[in-house]
Image (cartoon, rainbow, N blue to C red; front, side):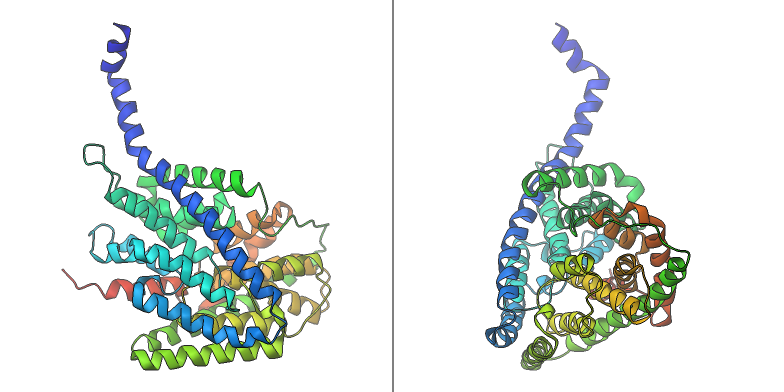
Length: 432
């Protein structure tokens, strides 16, 4: 029969093998997108409540409680959920070849639940924290768990590909930036595996991106940003601001890393005292710098781009120190979106102080530069900002700012925050 001939054809057998090999990536990407959408919905409700009450005295009391609650739920139920989630995923990539037992802790079901609940507790009380880094770890965990329970009689997906594709899908669905997910996978999560798993990464990003758009709409993270033409001076202004903000981003990252490394060696009572102190300092920052301190920072970025001429000199202080006190409190939560808002505030302030005309452009330059200073992933930084704002007419300025910031950041430290934090996680694994 014709059907038998087709089934026995070697080409059909090869195609069927490829389908079975890619099927876990398709299913995991779909699940990751659905979880990311639900997480986004819950996180937004919590963040909106905090922003709505940011001008009221209650937020000054809820901030320390939220930081304590987020830390404690992570400490007692899944220590691997504490922090951003990106260093954990990078560490998992490095450990994937050896199939270290630590992988099961980094991507466990308790971690997944604690990551979502802990970050929402943090932000609802006024914490300056984002969901993008946590989404990346949650997505990678979904991919990892699916691979563990994948039927043994079917082709098994390679573990490095599973983690890499999961991380890329997480970034793509969190920011609605498919290209950003792919570039991040290449630049940050893997230096050696990408040539082997590029198809899996692309497919995971496409599926996660399509489902995110299907449920959330084809939105731009920051809305559409329109530009006119720029004088030649804008090029020099881009270089200046990228250099300054890149150093600031690197200094911020180094402060986070050194404090975190010092904190991890302390006893639980000391950690609790430090978290409470950070909560009190966060409340003081909210009190003195205003309600713009609160939240992940998306609303702040949108407002700056819509009204670039309105200058609040305390806004950079609020965003940077709010995020610093939140993260060093040992909470569950990320620094990705808060870092972008810190860069936006710095870019706007410096541009207005010097009387530069192209303020809107320099806000985007500040975002790229600050994120580059923290992550040392210049391509990811400018691609994310480019996709979030659909600012294709300023792509060369954003590319230039990422390169300049990457160079100037080395004045403070030769390595980025995520890389250093991931190395510390890997170093806890005994040598075999």
